[in-house]
Length: 81
Image (cartoon, rainbow, N blue to C red; front, side):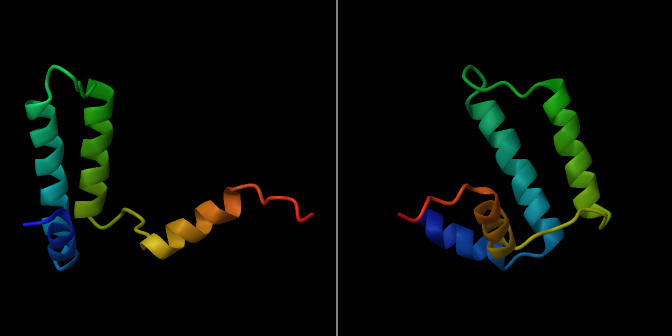
């Protein structure tokens, strides 16, 4: 299965399922790359806080187009010559 196929399937999941996938991936990467990747206690706490916010509905969610538009608004515009 390709990464693009997996991404497409993930878009079909509900919020709770996506959070579960996110948690699984973080744990999986941390375990598989234990020598090269260390999740600090502070980062673990932040991820747990964010996961709880998603689960209890207090997290503010954005669609990719909103994020992309916001990032474009922050980047400096090249001078028109």
